[in-house]
Image (spheres, rainbow over the protein chains, first blue to last red):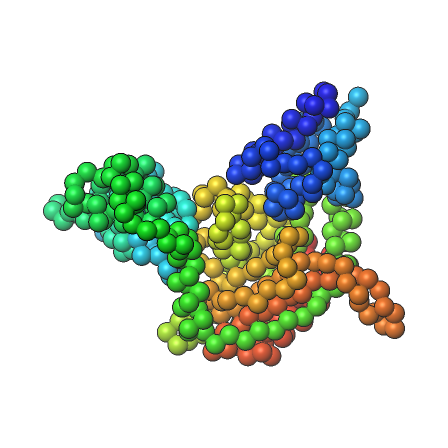
Length: 82
Length: 357
């Protein structure tokens, strides 16, 4: 899976969980939860859905590394099973 | 024979639209079965029957607006004979679903259109242009306004607050979650609800109602959980039978409740049987909340955002995860002493999180 495909998958899940958000609302370097008003429950839902698609489980201690769209994409690129 | 009537889905509701029947005449229904969906200012609610029997006659057609208490169907218990025919025609307003939606959106009363004949989208839009739109035309805002005005007028509130060191509970939870898969992860919100429920078992006076000038304590604990909707607005559906749940069950039920609230798939029992309210401001909110009690409940627990704060422990000053827990109590039902005892129990429970399993 390419970096671009991973980014698409993340955006897809955000739009799925929060259907009122438009794709252009998601700014690459802004805190996802704060800028899009995603609470901890919806954030966990997004990570759970991405785990099912990408096979990468984000432990709670790594939440700081997946705070923006950019960081989350990089995190999955780095941790994707070979 | 009994009438199955349009239930009141909250003290502020006057009418709702019966959207869809999920049963037909002649069907056997059991207690707690969802038989219809109604649309209220709080979204689509699934309504249940509270007795076993057979749907003898359906009185109201789909997409009909009815006031609370309007008979919707006759239910016959198994040992009853079929009844005599009835000629009573309930009053209803015919309108297409699109017109109804538009009318609601634009704050147009469809009853005022009924006299002019057909109600369609074009008619509604025409009337909307003539009617100035008020800032409060949104149904949910109006419903909240009514309930809160009633609360403030009737309930003599008292407020208490305490700071709780959440570091032990959060550290315990982090460690607990580290050994589990992502689908089994527990959120702090579930831990907090479980802790409140446990504290309520020890101080049950806060869990119940003030009705007919009497304080009635409820044995079951159905906390109303304040859930923000993504498009604005707030609903506090009940987490039914929370007193019977461990931590995993609480998390599972909370997830299910949030998902159904946000996709507007709640049941009438969840809209009407709350015994107390919990407002958890979570990770995005402010430090503390002094809430307004939903009548006929007698208390509201407010949990503020957990944040890093200076904390004195023995003779050292350190930084801890701190949460402001508040209690709004109905002074007719309880005194500050009871409320204080509750906050003290809640604090004690959260210092021993392993007991929350």
